Length: 171
Image (cartoon, rainbow, N blue to C red; front, side, top):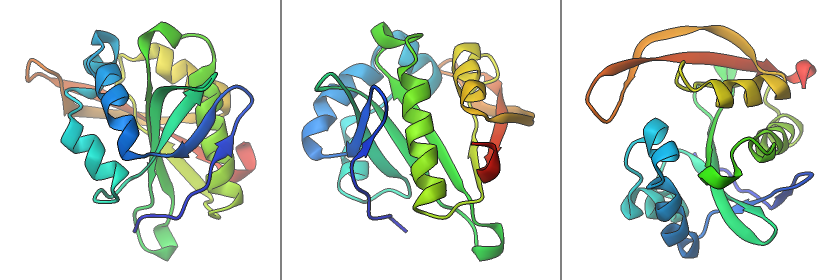
């Protein structure tokens, strides 16, 4: 189910519903080696599906200083008794390490808990993606456990992931 979304204002970033006009810029960002390393190939078709609501995840363009600098998304799997939200994001490499990802995650988490009523959020970065893990932990996410051989890298080698979660009262 695709959620109706509004613009979300963080301290330094703005999240707005992903539009078809964002696809070219996000395809460029997805091709950056530090983004592609963790996300694999991000195609125009993949992003258009998200922008046009043909994807299970609901996506936002992340803006900083009026420019599209990344993508944040969430999905809401499970029935009512298991309902929670999963989130994910990527940012353009030149802005890594500046706190923008942390701001985007916190902004999205506040909305998912406050407006969508979720009691738990999850995120599952690659275990080796230590900068992302530090950003998520700075928001309040806690390590749940290692997901062994969770995803395949561009060489086809299985890599471990790390499951983190955040309960509503921990934000």
